[in-house]
Each structure stands twice: as structure tokens, then as C-alpha cells.
Length: 138
Length: 79
Image 1 (tube, helix red, strand yellow):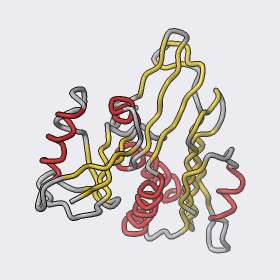
Image 2: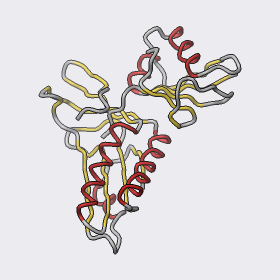
Image 3: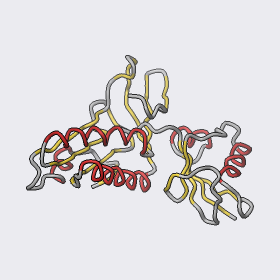
Image 4: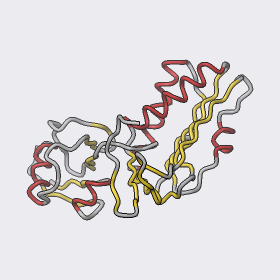
């Protein structure tokens, strides 16, 4: 499952995707909308994406996971549109026979999304709005 | 030849629309398309952070073909 969607995300649904008999560990990462950016109050976010290409790149990240760790149970869903504080923007689930690979691969996925997948976020403040354009930060 | 150009995030706001069609000379490169865009939209960057043709990352020396879908990207900030 590699999906860009306007729908509210369900961490359970994404986790279930990688719940297979041989997997002793699933690492699920949920990225949520923070109420501040470097201490400045954020009202809400808006995410934009190039959906067809982004979904293809998410699938390529899963291929990288397969090459690096031999894992094939990866599910990634990223939400776009307007998101409120506390809502999930991205859910990543990686299933593995053992926990170490699950943690490592899950961390790898979120890093790769930030540098490799055409998705952008805009922060809305009380006094304005700004597209975040620092792909390798945070 | 005619190509479709897509814009995202801050680039979309500079251009004021999500997509346009651009008429180019046959054999034009992505770099030539960028020069065309900068002429039409003076605030459009002459060195976009990255670009894709038909949903694959490319270098700006790539020669375009009629009907290509070109996309220009500011730095990503997903996650």
C-alpha cells in the first residue's frame, strides 16, 4: 500500500497491511501536525503533492528497503489537503521477522520521504503562511 | 511542439495556476523550457530545485518530446 490521499489516516489500517505470520515485529511511525514551527504558533497545515509520481516514489522506497534489509512488508500513506493540529499527515508501517530491522527500515522511510518524494507542506500562522522548503532539515 | 507543465507548492503560486501548456521548438531542452517560463513569469526560478518529465526525475539538459508532462519542484517538505 503506497498511497497519497485526502482522507483521514488510520494507523491501524496501515499497520494491518504488514501484519503477516512471519513478522515478529511491526514498527509503525505516525507523523502528526505539530502546533508550532520553531516556537511560532501554527494554526493548521496544508499539504500539496504530485500524487501519481509520489506514489511511485513511495513504492521505490519500499524497493530500497527490500534491497537493504530483505524486507517486503512496507506500507506508506501520506495525507494531503488541509490538516488540523494533531492530525496524522503520514503513516508508515514496516513488518519484519525481528524488531531491529523494523525500527531501522521505518526510520529510513521517513528520511527518504523528506528528500525524495514530491510532497510539500504549508504552515499557516496568525500573521501569514509559508511553504516549508528545507527538504533535508528536521 | 506542445508540452504540459505542472507546478506545485510555491511554484504554483508564482505561476498562479497548477498547469499550463507551452509551445516550444522541436528539440528543445528542459533548460529552454525554464528560460521560456522565466520570461513569462519573472518570479519563476531559473534554477528550480528539481524537475521531472513524465513523472521521473531528470536533468535540465534532457531533450523534450511532444506531449511530455514536465513538472518543476521546490524543495520537498513531506512527512
